[in-house]
Image 1: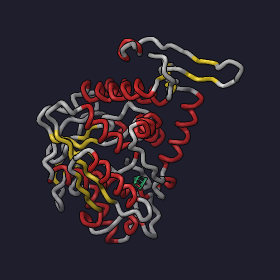
Image 2: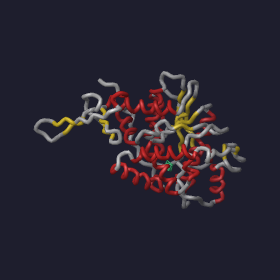
Image 3: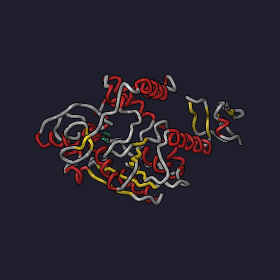
Image 4: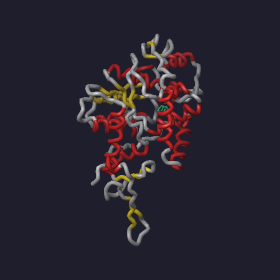
Length: 335
Ligand code: SF4
């Protein structure tokens, strides 16, 4: 069997046609086994074993090339119970097994009726299976309202509230747990969507916030180890490892601009394989060139809660103030 490192340099296409039938069986580019995935962007077909090896190698490379994790660190992994965060916890647990790194799972309960309860059960189950400490924090306990209450009767995108309060809740929980980093399950699709959304809105500031950022007081640095992995491969990774749990889509997802951008990017990807990768790579080149002309803002402490912010109040306290006074806001999806 060829090693995956060597084999990945040159794709080998192979299809077995059974005698007397029209059925075709695609075989792995690296061995003679049946392929379970065809990576159109790389030209490779991979069997189950080589797919898992390739997946974990690429995540390891992402973690190492950006020095995302250092020995002696405690990493708070945001685990919602969906496929991305489940794969993230499972994969980090495997690839960091021999390193002096502690993982803690943190689940945020936004309070979305008929949706979040199932995924919280799944989050607890995967943490238990891997023997990783798990903690749940809720919007209600942290801010006094659940998401359904926050958006009831308001003409705002629920994702606006959700994104702001989730980031804040995760940061607070990570600090309580003494974590050095917060790892989130953002994947290649999420990254490409975020870049495209900011292009469409012409929001250069928010676009530049997608770059890796230096540590700042009060803000636990965030890492995205799955940022180069396509969503479909993450789902497949969960399936072959027996950790896939079917979950429905958040009922608020269709109300955001992201849902339209996601459909557009998926359509482009199927017509022009590699579109998502090139969107992210193109942004990385722009961000590199913009270095120096766009400095990271210094953060202060929120006057009300002490969380890091750029103005007098952090975004969460600002939104809570609007909630209490009954006014509404912009339609941005902040994820
Ligand atoms: Fe929150 Fe929007 Fe995601 Fe639902 S789709 S969990 S409201 S960010």
